[in-house]
Each structure stands twice: as C-alpha cells, then as structure tokens.
Image (cartoon, rainbow, N blue to C red; front, side, top):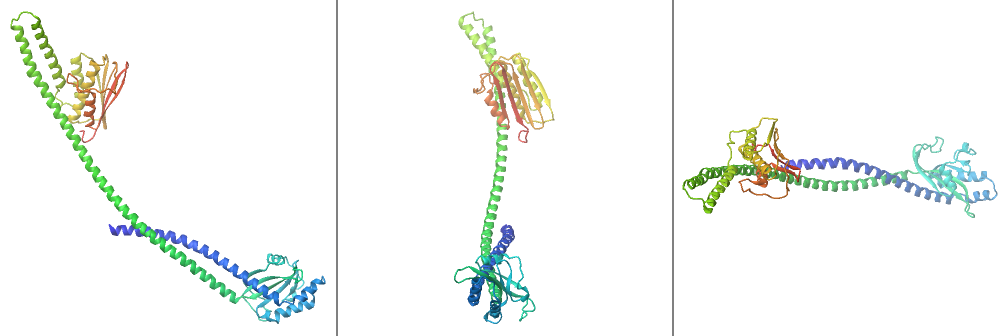
Length: 462
C-alpha cells in the first residue's frame, strides 16, 4: 500500500512538474527577453550618449557656429574639417562612417561624397535628434566595400548627435555616425548571459521549492485518501453489521409478535372453553335450582349474563383463525367475513394481485389484525353504513385500505387496547413498523375515514 501511495504521489508530482515546468519556462522566456531588451536599450542609450558627448567635444564647433552665424550652410572648409576629424583624427579609430544632416533631410556632408546634397525622408531618429535628444541603436551592418578598411558585418553603434550653438543652445546640425561596437557587443552578450543565468537560477530554485511543497502535499493527500478509504471501508462494514442487526431485531420482533398472538389466542380459547363454560353451567344450575324470583336472583342472573357476554367478546377479539396455511388474500377474506358475521355488516373486499407472493406468518398476521381492528372501529365507533376493503399485492409492496362513510375522528388522538380485546391503531402501527411498514390515516369529521397499511416486500418480511 505504501508503494502504491508513493506511486500515486509521484504521478501528481510529475504532473505538476510537467505543467509547472512548462508555465515557468514560458514565464522565464518572456521575463528573460524583456530584461535582455531593457538591458540592451539602456546600455545602447548610455553608450550613445557617451559617444555623442565625445564626438561633440572633438568636432570643430567654431567652423559650424561661424557658418550658422552668417546664415549660410556648412562651407567647404567646414566639410573638409569634419572629414579630417572623422577620417584622420582620433575619431577615425572608432567611427567607420558618418553623415551630417540638415533639418529637411539633406545630407550636408558624408563619408561618401556622392551622398552629399541628396535629400531623404527624415527618419524618426533624425527627427528626435533635431529635437535636441541623442538617438542611438545597436545593429550589425555591412559597410560599403570602398571604406578604407573595407569593414564588413561588424557590430556598430549608430548615433545621431545634435550639434548645438554654444551661445544660443539651438541645434545647428545633426551628425550621424557609426561607431565600432565590438566591446559593446561583448558587454551586451555578457549582460544578457548573466541575466538569463540569474533568471534561470531564480525560476529553477522557485520551481524546486514548489515541487518539494507539492510533493509533500501529494504525500499528505494520499495519506488522507488512504485514511478516508479505510474509514469508508469501516463505515461500510459497520453499516453491514447494523443492517444485519436490524434484520435480526426485525425478525425477533416478528417472532415475538407471533408468539404473543399465539399466547393471546390460547388465552382466548381458555376463556371460551374454561371460564365461559363454567359460567354457562352456573347459569343453567341457577335456572334449575328452583329459586323463586327475587331481586337478588335477578341480579345474579344478570351478572352471569354480562360476564358471559364480556368473555365471548374478549375471546372473540383474542381468537385467530388458522393463518399458517392460508395465503394473504384468504386471510383478508377471513377477516372481512368474521367481521360481517360478528357485527352484521356488509363490508366489501376487493383483491388485486399483480404478482404471486408467498408471505410470512408475521405478514399475514399483520394484515389480518389491521383489517380486524379497522373494520371493528368502522362498525363500532364510526357508525359506518358502507365499508370498503381493498388489498393490492404487487412485486414491491402490499397495500391494504379500509374506507368508510362514518363520522370520522381526530387522528391525532391516541387509542390503546380496546376493552373487547382490540389492539388500537397505535399498536397496529407498531406492528407494521416491525415489518418496515407504516399505517396512514385520512380522517375527516362528518365525511369518513380511510386507513392504509403499506408493507414493503423484502427478504426479512417474507
């Protein structure tokens, strides 16, 4: 089991590792790219500003200023001075080409003489430079082959430098030049590499910590799942034992009820065959004793008659027909016939059997007692003139209904054992409960009463 838990937890951990690793890889790529771009932009801009300050300090500004003061474009002398500064001076070691621009996009001077005097659409970098800001970008270009050093495909820093008048601060012209940037390229590569290494380390460490946390959580979840499964198995086992115990209790209650019925039946027979016979004999002896009529004699005779009547009622209530060999429909017919004979009633029985059914003695006894009690109530207490009995037997339940047109009663009132041996509706409900059944009452004053017995068909009820 422990190996299974470890296997399941490792599957969860691997799932997290796959999904989390993919998410972190994408996040690291996006973050690394943004950081690298920001680093490159910052380094290139700073390098461009530094180069611009350096170039600005080396250019022969007095020539440019003088030309601007006279209101003329850069003179030939100025162009030659700029060409000498870029080609022969210290700038020639780092600057590979240059252009000097007017505000309208005309090339005033250039490393390539054929470009001088040509006009181009001002670029965004040129417009930015004429606004007074240094613009720079890093790229690898192929410089023309007629360059003295024939430089091809080297990393270059393109810079647009605004040249200002030292007296007014106005931008006089813009110098565009390309500076060799092998060192800058190396620095950028190192910075990018260091940033990527740092980002990968951070994400790797974070991912490792998250993996450890998730793995520990997976182990905890699997342990809790194991405990929950064991608790579920224990609950099912306990439920099974409880169900078996409930069935045993139900069966015991049924056997107890059946035994009690047999005892009551024997008591009824004893009363009928014993005490009732002795009272009957005493009454006959009293008649044949020749005792003259008197108040005491009449009292004795009346007492003996009342005792006989009560004993017959009690014994009739306690007595039961032989239900063991009868089927359920015959038990219902017996209950209705016995009631009609005892009360002079004309109750009608309707039996509907949708499936053949073999019932236990407890079920037949429950149906018989239910019909006996409800029919007696309808005739004795409700004053009903019409009584209908229906018995429906299906493959899932038994439903017995007794309805009458009597005066009705308050169904919330509690009734106990009747004086004639009847058991009362609460006792019938308790008897039905031992078979997982129930008794339902629908009674209205002045309208009538309908009482239903519903018994589910189950193994313990059969």
